[in-house]
Length: 311
Ligand code: SN0
Image 1: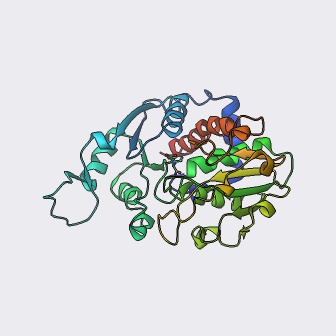
Image 2: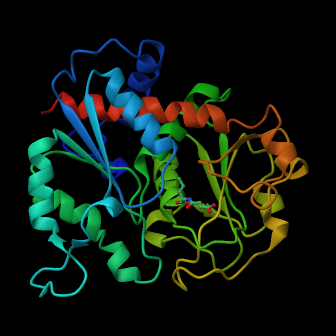
């Protein structure tokens, strides 16, 4: 693998999931692979799991890790040809080349603006790093995708499924803040590539990018969609069509123990208790959110391993 910016960068998904599960059983097997190699992680936004699990994964492979919260550095300019006489101090052209001298792999977290759809969809932060850096780039959640989370979700479902083709439901939930579509996008793309029966359920008007959902089943009736589900992935996203807006706060969409039935409950975290999902679900044995978060390490580790093998 040359970069990990979308799940499409994985050449053999089922082999990669198997490899991740093997790494989980024997995390220190490839301690020499990352020797004298440095991962630089750049954060434009908050992080808990991504930051710690990716650092842990890198260290399991023997890498050194350096972390920079970009807000502590210079305000970066991404436009070409700008007269930089206002508030951006350094151009991405220099920054990416400079960081490439200190790093063997660069990982970037940069959320969308949720204001300018075209700008967000151009993935200008991630793509400019890819354009000007001379080392592989990992997406730690960009404007439109969260492929490390999707990999952890795929590992979790593979480990826990009791059926060859489980029914997986992605269910929208209310949220007080406008959130990205990134987690939902990558989850949908990942499920489309796995042997699962996927249903997406959300209020009318909350359609994700149709280029991503393509032929996946969308059912606006949450109760009907949840019938016989084996895994229920709950996630809020802000409106894609009326871009970045919150149109519905409908609390009836919150996941409850009654709606969940016998299914396993999944969420990428962080989660707003009793808004997105009620306590009774999170505090039950049906919730697998902690295991999902554990698998973030092995998702990052398999990605780092495949990138290191290609350097
Ligand atoms: C982010 C999102 O993409 O939905 C990161 C998830 C991995 N989530 C949030 O920003 C939640 C913020 C909040 O205040 O609940």
